[in-house]
Every structure is written in C-alpha cells, then in structure tokens.
Length: 382
Image (cartoon, rainbow, N blue to C red; front, side, top):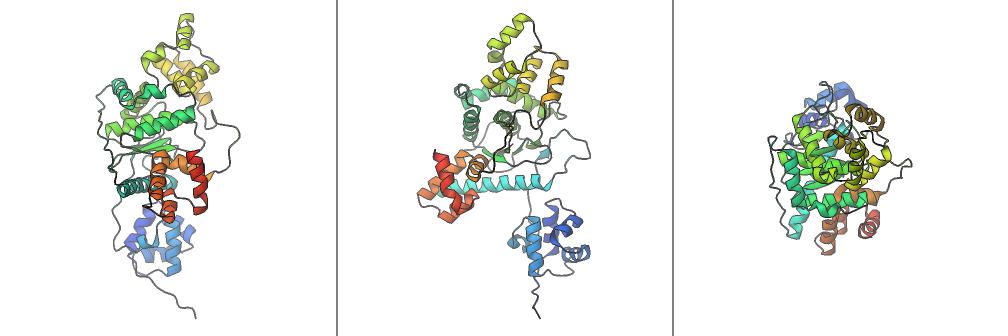
C-alpha cells in the first residue's frame, strides 16, 4: 500500500491564499478536485493535506508550497482603490487575473530594487506632489518642463514616442510596466504604497497612443499620492479621475500649441465644428494621441459640439478601433521588453555582464526561459 504523507499546515494560511485570489470554495474545489467537505476540513485545520493536495492548492492559488507552509497568513498590501466607472455592485470586486497583475507588478518592482542594490546604485525618490485643489493644467505645464517633453514632441513615430515618454517618467523614480490587464475593463493602474511608485499600462493590442494617455493619467495619480485601478472613462464618477484626465490632456496637448495648430485654426476660421476622422487622426499624430482624445480636447475648448462628440465616441470607443486588423502571434522577447521596460531590462543585462548575477538569475529576473535570453538581448539592442 502506498504511504500517504500528511503535511502539517495552518488552515488559516490556506484560506488566506484562496481569498487573496478572490476564489470561492466552490471555485477552489473545481480547480483542485477536492470536495467541499475536504476543503473546509483543511482550512479549519481539522485535517492535514497530503503532498498531492498541497501541490494542487499551490497551483490553483498561484502560490509556492513554501508560502502555503507559513506558520501564519502573511500581511499583504491591499489592491489600489477602484476608480472604474461601474455599477456599485462591481466596485471593489476584481477578476483573479487583475489581482495577479497587481501582484506581478509589485514583484517586478522588488526585483528592480534588488538589481539596483546589486549594482550599488541608489534609487531616485519620487518627491513631486500635487493636490486636487491644484489646477491640473498648471501641474501639467510644470511637469512638461521637468520631463523635457518638448523634445519628445518632435518624434513622429508613436511607438518610439511611447518608449521615450516611459523612460522620462521612470527617470523620476517611478517603475513603469506594461501588464496583461485583460479583465475588469482596466486600462491602467497606479500603486503608491511601495518604495518606488508603480504605473501599470495595459499591454496586449492597446494602441500606442492609448498607452501614452494612460501613462500620464496614472502619473497624475502618483502626483496626487492616490493609487487606483482605472478604466479611463470619458465620464468618470470620481473627482480624482477627472483631474487625472485633465492633467494627461494638458500634458500631451498643451492648450497654447493645440489652439495654434494649423488644422485647429483652419476649422475655426471656417466656423466648422464637425471634424473629419482623417483630420482628427492627422492632428492626433502630432500630439501622440488618438482621434477621440483630440475630439475631447476640441470639446473642452468649445470647438465642436457635444452631440458630435458623443456620436463619434459611441462609434469609435470600441476595443477594435485603432488596432491592427491582423494580430501578431506571441513574441516572447518582444513581450518581455514591453512588460518590464527598457530601464529594467538594461539593468538586468548590465548586472549579468558584470558577473553580479548568473544566467539562472537573469532568466528569473526576466521571467523567461534560458532559450529566450539571446533573442531578447538581440532584440533589445537592435
């Protein structure tokens, strides 16, 4: 007869691991194959799990076995505040993939700090602040000077512009990651309860100009010291979301330059408030934003009508608008560079080249198999 090894485990830790991923007991049973009665016995410490049960729980809860063997449930920082425009019943309730994305962002930030310490580099401390009583347009004007954004404004390729904007924001002492935010209608997140504040941008097939707007919206959250999980609604229910939207709009489309743009002047002179999509796209390319952002800016300045804006918003505010029709297959090196950012990747390769970490460490830090490292390096330095 096969010996069944029982493992001494604190049931409260098992319950914490399940609840931290927002799983019900029924969901946990479906994933682990355990009966509801057995799960209750384990979580109440009435029974002890076998090694196979512990492995199943580890896989289902996305926690290491070592974590499940802790004496007591660890204290874990809460999710950022829910800033979505959703029904009250949805507020504060997130899909497990969102929870895992936040967890991953925190883990990557810790790896980033460890890399800097390994290299003997100090970590710049983000010290800029703003309040909701401050004018967002003035805060944006000041930030443009700090980040030297006029230089980036000259870049015509929006993808290169996105990289440049991210590097400038990271230079302030903020970690920026592109995450797989596939649930809960999220476009971005900001975390302010870490040593280094974190901005998370939706990765996937999100257009570069949308990522840029999200980047500066979340920077507004960092300035205000109020993290959040955001959907960047056009009609936000939170004052802080309105402030961050206005801040991002003024950062990217400074009123003076915007109103002096050739196309804006042309439409004004003609008394025309109904813009063609082609002209909106052309003007958006100049400011690294999409046509809807341009149209919203025109509305803010009284240069289009609310009915025209709403009509186009309904037509264009769809997941597929502005995205390539043919989607690329998975490209692990490309995904890795996008997710972690050039600052993080560069630091990891420098640490490896100086023999401060070995190949296995590099693989762990990049989150990829050893077989992908050379391809990632080639793409990064190409």
